[in-house]
Image (cartoon, rainbow over all chains, first blue to last red; front, side, top):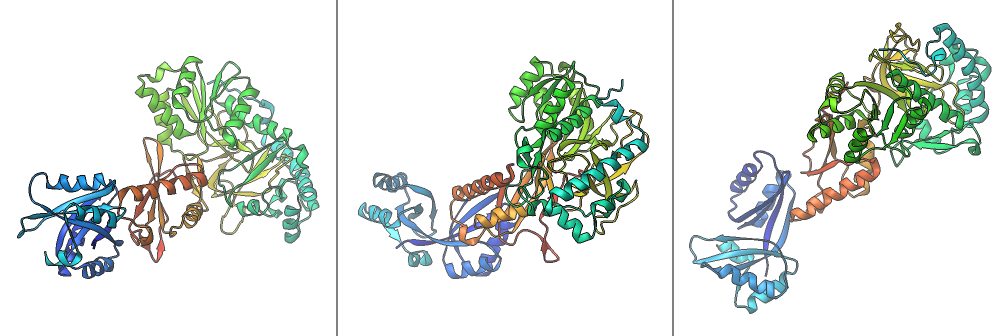
Length: 143
Length: 435
């Protein structure tokens, strides 16, 4: 079920993000969501894209370290309180989150949350049971 | 400044007499080593030199060299020249694998070493009226013990502080009125800075002089320490292989260090050919211990590049002077007083499962060495959380600290991001401009 996240190690050097986004554009990759965790010296770029293979190849060719990992994507209503409702479900199920980020689309009246947990299946079951819709890579490609 | 000597008859001995003394001692020492150190005997035999070929100091170039590699091969007791039961102490260099050197001392050896340190202390004008704060590390490192022993011989009140614990250093310095400070120059600068931060002015302390060694330092650093502490700062030279600090020391001229020639004979050689160079030439410094019993190294190549000079000195000492080391003829780095070989970093990386692609970056900020190691991250080790990467950096730094004795800042960088020139990586970037 889970969706694929492209995870890229980026040194804090001027122009690194420009280089990455240009390479993705050249490979005709659409970025659906993006988040960066950074320290003074390096950042970890997390990307949800419409074409994982093309994106991986483009960045691999530039010598970046890339890791494809599975994360949980949840569809939530685009209204106040919806995110906390989803997080509350995970909390009640005793599922710890490493990190999360959210994104919107132009066409739908929905928001999406990307959640990184240790046990994807448990998180998905808890969220599904609570009535949330879990998205797949096929859903992402269509967004 | 009034000149004071610890052993005036030796320190001001006419040069001809020094040479005579050196000749007598060398002849005896070569016989001692040949008879008791099979390792060196083999080197002499290989070169076709017999003890009887050495009739005086002028014959010294006939003897084979010893290098750090020999010391490693002979570890731990292969160069010991007396029964172990006659030894009273060891000291050792910092490296934990391969590079470690263990030096043995009889009581006679400790005495002559402490005499050398006592000469260094009295050359700063200090006497038994003085309070000597020894802030070099005690233990396997020679710095603490050497100056401690010298301070006792002079009769100073000795404060055996060892290194670190700056607050306590300052408390004892002020409360007990230390007049002589012995430590690494970078720690002296750090103490000066701490004193300033605590609101003390240079005239608030009772210090008159400092004896600073175990790492390279510049004239600018000397001036800055002198101004900050209101003292005269003197350089001291030595290495564990020859005994420790005190092999050579600065006098009131503060220009070059007098080598204790009655115990250590110095030569300058061409590091490539091994040929002895005339006085005044720049080359690699080679030492022969003339009368140490337990660990008497003959023609030991220090890898330090410097110049010797026998120009008469205003302090009255007749012993030859060596310049501050101007560089190394190998890749050893001295960082915060500790000897570091780049190969040690490589060993740690391989052991910890990293590729040996690294770069050491050294700089000096506020008179203290910064020590950064950039390491290329392996794709297999990469995870998506910041915490795991910083944890990897911390655990690598801890492994390096265990190996080297000092703490680097480790930075994981992208693969292939470390600059390679002509296919060969530049392993060390030293921005300290020490030489």
